[in-house]
Length: 485
Image (cartoon, rainbow, N blue to C red; front, side):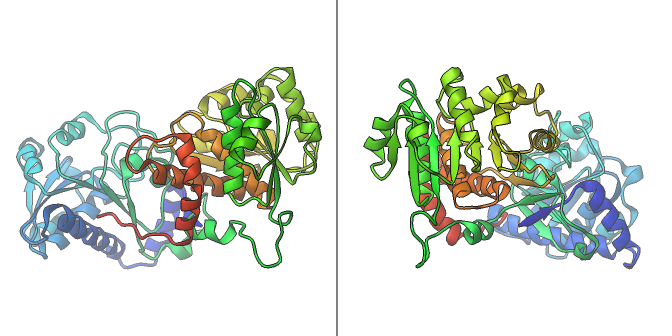
């Protein structure tokens, strides 16, 4: 798993490392890494390094110093570098001196537009991880003259480093280069960060356990249940799906289908849409009532079951079976309206709740707000459940405080029925005995990847996402490399 640390902890670790490192060494190491990434971007976007033009947007302090030193390294490779000092009196003195020694140009803000419009690449060194809030008007006005790709130093200026919130003008980077460790913003706001390149500056020994985690393909491949020579349909996991109705049979078909395609050993469907499920998924054991469903090792309950008495009875029955359960869609609304329904659950039985922002508000009485990680953690502890907070960036919080962040691959999952597909994936993994927190995170990862593969650059449907699950699992086992180019 990739670790992510809050900015307070990273600053503390940097201070400990600085105390035992020669002055300026860490900044030069970081800036050299940034210059290498800048050179790669110049090759990709301008077709050359030597002879290209780079503009630096330089703020006060160390972030501006990183940009200035990176400019000095680029000058040695034949790049024309112009630095725009937003606060000349507070520019990093050693970085500024290095840039000037290397032959860099320094211009005042009023002369910046002509250099920004001609640049092949702009490096954002306006503010660092100690800043908060949107860009100041002066910096925001300069961005209006930028048409070239932007490389952000540590984070895009104007984006909150710990929550990813954008409350006003902010840089939207083509790529972000960060130092020592990933920060929350890199996972929580990929739309503004772009791909993130991590430069090792020796900070690892100063960092303890991460505050957040991010799964990669290797994690998912290592834990996804695949049949072995000693397995049968029962050892692979038997998942029960309680979804759909005569009015909404599609929810049942989608949730059941995703459990089938997730390699569950057996899928039992219980509900009014049994005929539709059999027609689409003949391998499913389908019955009209949850009381006749037979034994399962997990339940996925909620999509399309309705929020009235019958829906509540279905949820209570599933909760009382003593097996892990994923509660989605209508099941979440039932819990929000009648929290006593959870009394049917053994407190030690794993429970996964999968709300979107509106359902989260019903459950807790408040919207997630800007700090979605804190909101998900609080709700997970409150309900003693894994809380999968859906959104462009999905947060998976465990009751013990562990948090997984899934970085989205576009917005392709913003389509009716995609949540039903996710609930079936979660249910299948729970049936296989995967830890509920990890199961929710793995399901989210594969769901997101399936959305990308189904879309192929254009809006898609939940049925297409469902069909792409096998391809997503194949790709997880053979991931393709990525970069910031």
